[in-house]
Image (tube, rainbow, N blue to C red; front, side, top):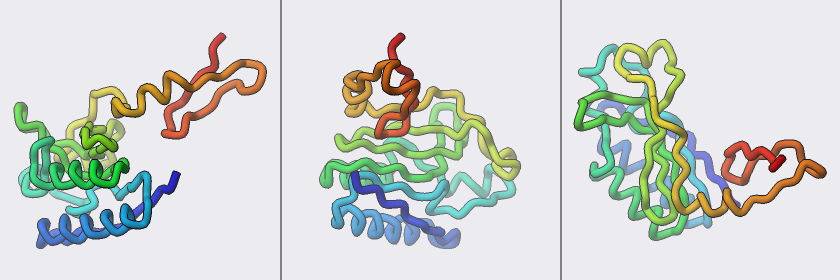
Length: 166
C-alpha cells in the first residue's frame, strides 16, 4: 500500500484557491499510484478561529461541491482519501472539526473529532459518532483471522485494533 501524507496550509483569504491547490496535490499523489492520501486537519481553511461565524464560510457537507469533487477523484483512481475539513450538519447547523473519509467507491463518511483542542471549543462540537469504517473495507476486517498462539493483539492494515478470538 502506497500512502501519501500531504502537508498543506490553506489560504484563509481564498478558500476556493486552497481547495483547487489541494485538489491538484491530491491528484498528483494519485497519479503516482497512491492508495491512501491523508491531509492535515482543516487543511484548506487554516486552524485558529475566534467564533463559529468566522468558521462557517469554510464549512462543507456531504453534498458540497468540494466533497463531490473528491468523491469523483477517489472513484476514478480507486484510492482512499482522508481530508481534514470543517463539517457543518445542515439539519442542526452544528460545526465539527472533521475528517472526510472517502473510500475507493466514492462513499464519504465523516469522523468528527472527539477530543477538541482548546481553540476548537470556541466553535466546534465534540463528535459523538462511532469511528467510521468504509463499507468496502468491512469484508477485509471480517476476513482477518488471528489466533492466541501467534499474536495476542494486532492492528489491521487500516489501523483498526483487532483482538484475537478466544
